[in-house]
Amino acid sequence: MAASVDPRLGMALRELREGRGLSLRSLGQLAHRSKSHLHELEAGLKAPTVGTARHLDRILDAGGVLARLVDAPIDHAAEADELRARVAASDVVNALLERIEQGVDDLASSYPTMPRLIGCRWRGGGPGPSGVPRASCGSGTEQSAARRGKPMSSNSEW
Image (cartoon, rainbow, N blue to C red; front, top):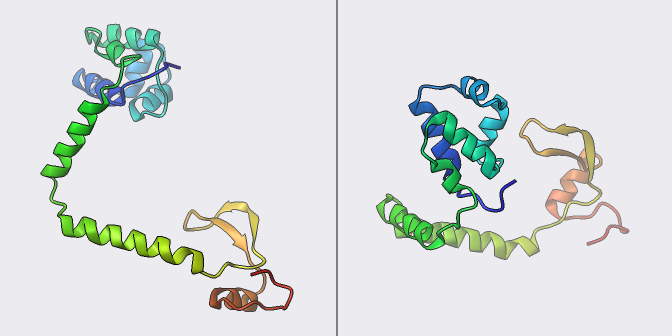
């Protein structure tokens, strides 16, 4: 894996591929790479080596665009300027940002005072319908008491 990769590499690869009318599968066949590997490069999940970037440059006739994005120093000042410009151009108003900040502060302030569920253990079987891992917290009565912040027995830890 490359030491540093410009985060714009994935977008550049996708634009070059789509600009030439190639699917991931067809580029994979031309470049002798798997479709899933190319997808991971485009999504920024994996970083290509300099050799892979040069190879894709040749296949896509990109003139070294991709290779320059691998092991190139990242210009953090330029990225910060781009982010500032995006925020300035967005329709998010300061009042909304202040309300979000206040909500986060309120939540963080109340977190230490929230009751802790007692007797909970993670169950096997993967996540529940909401994607959250399933927890087993004893009987329904124990769960209700825990939600109200009341221990069921005198030996509970609070």
